Length: 464
Image 1 (cartoon, rainbow, N blue to C red):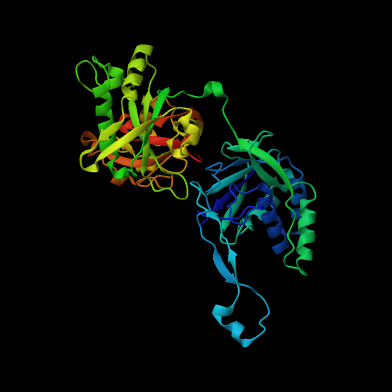
Image 2: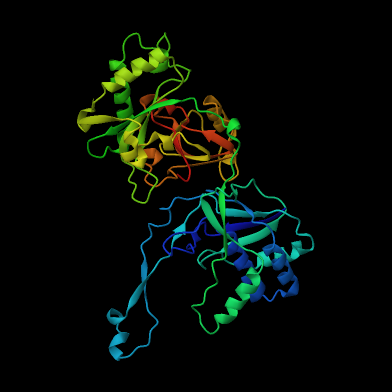
C-alpha cells in the first residue's frame, strides 16, 4: 500500500471545481494532488529520481480516498459572496487611475471547512525504491488548490479505511492522473511562460462512490414506522421545542382510546417511565443548507414495531390531530403529510432523510447525557468511551469509532445546545451536539441520549 496523508493546516479548504468557479471541490481530486507533487518536483529541482517516481505513480490504478465528510452537498461552499478585483488593463488616461473609474471583475474563492482536516489518498502497490523519493516530494508540497490552503503532506504505508472508491455506478466524478500527465503538465508550464492564461486540460474523470458495508450487516433502527406533520402557521421558534413536543404528546394521549398501552404512553402499568422502546416525537428543523435558520417546520411521530391493533388506534388518533394550543405561543394548525404529499413538500419535512443508511451522523437537536463523557475520549479518532458506547447500545447500535462533541450542530442552522431547554427532569443534565462515525453503516432514525423520545438527540446522516 502507498498512502499520502494530506492535512489542511488552517482547517479550511480553498479550491474551485474545474467546471464551476463558484463551487468548492471536495474531496480534493487525485489529479490535484498529483499536480502539487509535480510542482514540488519542478520548484525544488528534485532530479531524475523524482521524475521516475512520478511516472510510476501516474501509471497506477485510481486511488481510494478517506475523507470526512466523504461527500458534500451542492450548496456547501456556495454561500460566500464574490469579491471584485481591478482588471489589469492598460491605463489610457489619468482619470482611469481613480478607483471609481477602474473596471472590476467578480472573483470567487469557494471554501469549505471539513470536520476532519486530513484526507488520505490510498494507492495499491508497493512503492519499493520510490518510497523515499515520494516522501521527499510530499515534504515539499506547500498547498493544495489555492495558496490559501497550506497543507502538510507525508507518505505512509498504512491508512484508515477508505470512504470513497472507484465505482462504475458512482455519482461523484473525480479527476485522476494517468500516463502522460506529467509530460502534459511540463508542456503547459513552458507554454505559460508566453501566455499565463494557458491551463492544463481536465484529464481523465472516474466515477466514485461511498464504500459501503453489505446491507445484510446494517444494524436496524428500533423505530420502523413514522408519521410526518407540517406546522401551518408562521415559523415556530426552535427554543420552544420542549414545549411543542410535550403538547403534541398530550394531544395524542388525549385522542388515543383507553387503556393506553405502554408502547404509546411511555409508562409501565405502575406509572414509571418505560425502559422499552416506545412512541417518540421529533421536530423537523430547517437546517443543512445555505439559507437555513433552524425554525421548526413540523414534526414526526416514530413508532417501534407494534401489533396492528395498536397501530390502527394510533392512526385513528393522529387523523384527528389538527390543532395544538401552546399558551402564549398561540394556536398552531397541523397537517398530516401522506407519502404522496412528500413529493411537493420541503426536503426538511421528509422523514426519509432521517431514516436513511449512513456511517456518519450528526445531531440536529442536542443530546442529553446522563453522565459526562470524559474529554480524553472525545475528538478526532476517539470513540467516546463507555458513556457513548452505552447510549448506542440502548438503541441497538454498535460502538462508534469516532465521536466529537460541541455546543453547535454540524448542520448549518441547527440551534445551539444551550438554547434548547429539555424537560424539567433533564434540566441539570449535560447536553451537547454530537458528530458520530461508525465503522459500518447504520440505519436511521438515530435518536440517542436521555431525551430521545422527546425530541432531543435527533441525528441526521452527515452530508445530506
